[in-house]
Length: 174
View 1 (cartoon, helix red, strand yellow):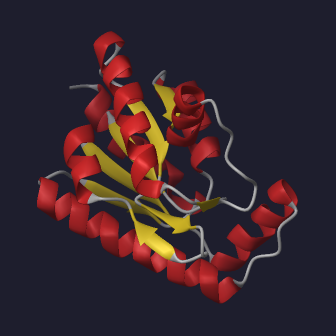
View 2: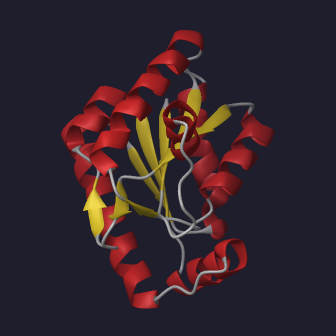
C-alpha cells in the first residue's frame, strides 16, 4: 500500500483517479473506509472530534483490504483538524500499523486549495490556516518517512504529476 497524503482539497481524489486510469491501481479513501465501518458520515467543515478513535476503524478496514490486495493507494491524511479547528497529527503508531511502502504527499498553492474548497464545500478558507496545515502535513510526512524508513515523494502540484506517477509506478512493479 502506498499512502497518498495531503490536506483537504489538495487533489488527492483527482490524483488517485489518474493513477487508476494510467496504472490500474485501486485507491481507497481513509475517510470513506472509516465512515463505512463507523456508520457515520464526516461533516463538511472537516473538523474531527475523535481523531485517535477513528484510527482503529481505519486499521480494521485496511486489514480487510490487505487480505484481498496488496498493491493499492490509501488516500488519507497525516494530520487533521480537530474539533477546535487546530492541526493535530495522527499518531505515529497508526502509520507503523498501516505499514505503507511509501508516502506520496500532494501539496498545492494555498490560494488554489482555498478556491477548490469554496467550490467543493462552499466553505471560505483562511489562506494562512491552509499554509499552517500544509506545512505541518509536510513536516510530519518527512518525519514519518524517516522513522519508518520508507520513501517519500512530495509533489508540488499539477505540474509534476508525471513524476508523482513514476514514484507510484516504481512500487506497482514490485
